Amino acid sequence: MRLVADREGNVTEVKSMQDSLLEALYGNVVGRFCVRPLISPAFSRAGGAFLNSGLSKALIGPTIRSHSIPMQEFEKREFVSYNDFFTRRLAQAARWVKPVPEIFVSPCDGLLKVYKADEDSVFHVKHARYTVGSLLRNRKLAERFKGGYVWIFRLQVADYHRYIYVDGGKVSRNVHIPGVFHTVKPAASDRFPVYKENTREYCLLRSENFGTLLQMEVGAMLVGQIENNPGNKTVARGQEKGHFAFGGSTVILMTQKGRVVPDQDLLESSRREIETRVQLGEKVGISGRVDRV
Image (cartoon, rainbow, N blue to C red; front, side, top):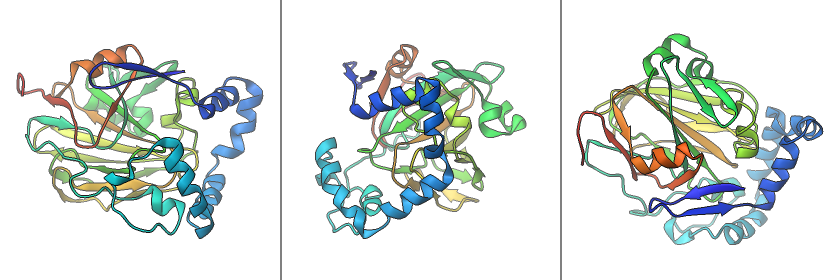
């Protein structure tokens, strides 16, 4: 069972057949042994090949119906494969990126939790312990985010799987870290440090309003590709950064100490291990240099 909140504070219990299956697999030794082939890059490549084929079109209708996806929010066109549908684009004006410079916005649709990294750059996701250094495989870079916040946006199948830069500024090159492809659902992430085991890619953004930000994309089961646009350039607030292929996925932001203050409802829900549903461009925090907006 998962707890999900909306921005009005209403909390819903969520339990799906897929959640139950993953709990069974990750909850015991035999299940974890059986899942090993499913998290391999080879399995993700094979799954991706099928989902890029015309045969996969048959899955589109059932997915729309079972997840109640509001297709009126997306560009209307014919899809040639399931992945073509999965990476669909929003219709114009379906999302609005807050233009106020001091407002910190969500880079994507998804379920959000916010964690404080302590002065040793350590944070915990349920029973899994993380250090920023192990997540980045770069201790020197991790020093820059001591005492800041780690924002974990978990995307589900029904979510929009394109993501943006949350502010304008100069972006670095993309750094790719190879790994496996655990599911990022709580059945796995509550027990194992999946974010430092899974394939991931990150860049730094020297932002106009929030200091240096780090944005990382984490692949998940059947997500064989993280498609990011090239780095080493100047970007604008709300500009598309990239997209995921099929599967649940995660976007992680790191903000420096004192530079961004998360909204209070997000901090309270996260403290209670409740995810909060947010949308791309929605306000989730404010610059640490102002009192309020």
